[in-house]
Length: 119
Image 1 (cartoon, rainbow, N blue to C red):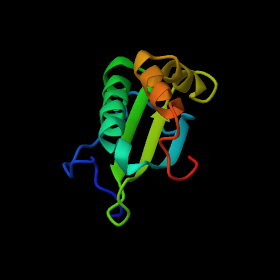
Image 2: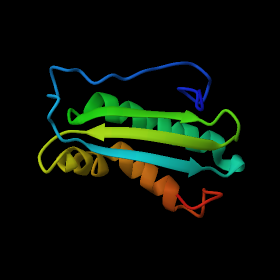
Image 3: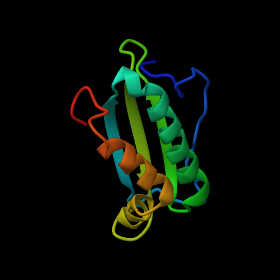
Image 4: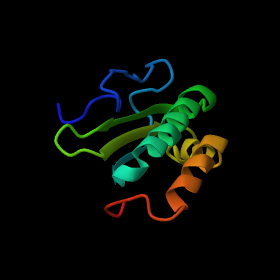
């Protein structure tokens, strides 16, 4: 596979519960690639682990929040997120974007330039 499930090489998975979403439901999904400055890797992992944990445990409209590090390019991470709710799932993403764990991510992302390539 291209990416490990977690930055430490361990595996975790998040599956969509079929009782929560019908096959015809529209979801708001994101696929994101982030290239992180190696000197900020530890801080990035702390912030993103917090964001993932908060998304999975405190956001009922978040169906999936997974990321992994590329196995061939260190400090390159790929994310996949899925949200449900009104407006084709945008309600779920908006709730995510207003959460405290997302605010911590925004603070990290806007503090200097933690990226080696534009997100």
